[in-house]
Length: 486
Ligand SMILES: [Cu+2]
Picture 1 (cartoon, rainbow, N blue to C red):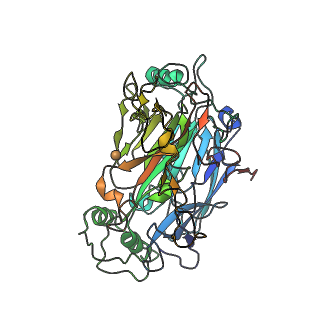
Picture 2 (cartoon, rainbow, N blue to C red; picture 1 turned 90 degrees about the horizontal axis):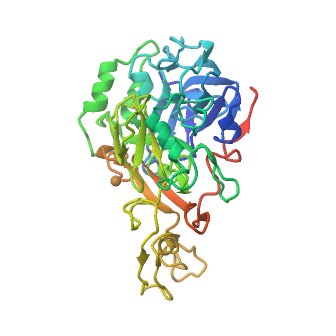
Picture 3 (cartoon, helix red, strand yellow; picture 1 turned 60 degrees about the vertical axis):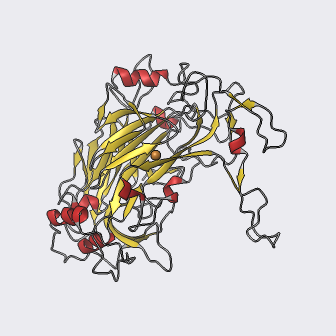
């Protein structure tokens, strides 16, 4: 049930996903693997919130009601904060249920709070016994409570690496995945850094253990409102929820997503498709979601589907290795650019951050060697034949031309030129309905990207393209940094 008196408001596009590290110190943390708040105990409230969605503006109000896990030091958001810990660590958690029906906190195979009654606070502890990327969620009245927004990511890192090997994200990687990580930064195929290596000597510097968490979700303002408006002792029927979410008749004519009042004709299908609660340009330009790295700086992306909808994520610029599926480390880490994920599914990608394959070279697409030479460009004064990489023509190009004013008659109006740097590539979902928002706003859906900010594998040493973000998400000086002995 909705609690108007205590619900939170979520401002859209506020930034990255809040990150918490719980438990003891660990090697990868001491290496500044994650910029995050360190805590000994998680303090969660199960509560509700109204969020301004991606299409919200003063003419077209567009809000959605959610149930959320709110960690007490962070602003309200769906999903809940990403929690990092290390295998073997004890996780302490205090959870209060501020809503009017029983809720829970559940991590498959690791922890089950059991039902937490309305108004009740529980205090528990558990051991993070296996490595990997897990969803934490409310598993009561499935899938209603989870899909209403009660979910987040729980990442367990290995305490050590195997002797004579490089770090992987797993306690027991398969030999094939171990080989892949051992090859990063040590072979001709993967020049640059290994996953566990950072570099403080450059600006912006490169953190070790580069890792991104993508929690996928779909939001239906009409359906979530119906759940929120139930009486205090009522439980929304799960089969009705699923049926409306998936099969309600599509109505394209209403633009009314408002929580109050809402158009009775409006359908119950999802209208918003999010990664870490963001979509469209908010996710695409967010360096906490879209990796921004140089060639030779491999990253891991953990993808977790908290929703009810299947997605098929397609990443450009690099093929990626699928190193784990649904928690299982792969013995055949296939090399792909598109991969399916189902409700409650997870997969881990290793993005090698090799030179983008559209750069012509001698050995073949994406392979490391000398780039071919391009002709002089007659449109660029003084252009002479030069290697096609680094992409100096692209990164030095402006659209429209530099110095173009918003008002051509006013020399003091803003320069509206945009530099084509860093080199940006999309990641989008091939399940087409997810590319829109609110039934039709294209490119405001489930998209992110992969951006190349430089190259550390060329003969000229480490180079950085213009406009690389200075605030690195996995950096102790990042916006979420801090510590707490709560
Ligand atoms: Cu594509």
